[in-house]
Length: 200
Image (cartoon, rainbow, N blue to C red):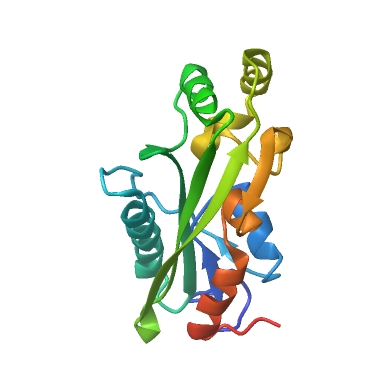
């Protein structure tokens, strides 16, 4: 890969995160100090079952950015929350966020993240997923109303941020905590190594 100044013609960053999520940026920084952030523009739509949905979207996001940056290793992810068989994405309105949190109140649910790593120049195309079980305490309507009024649920799958104000809602986490935040680092580390990026 070219190793010049970032503004040099033809420069390709060694690693690109295809997401504007500050949570994923912060998580990836725990593995790799230097990477570029280039969000994809793939619509988060579809009626696939949850695992297929997140894997398909993660790969589509990574491939879109990798097409323009073939010499870089591109990481992308997509996360959904599943309660019973219902897939909960990001709420479009405060009312939708309230409804999601009421569904999750006092019940277990799954957080499923699809992760893709693509290095187009080497024809590397990896996609995996992680599942974490989370159980919420029973939430009072007043708790939900205060949380939604603060705005935190609005760009989060399932309408909550486990590392933020919703930490108080959690009774139990079974599995990878980082996955619930948005990027399963243990799984990603292995994928990056297979793509040729070794992390100490």
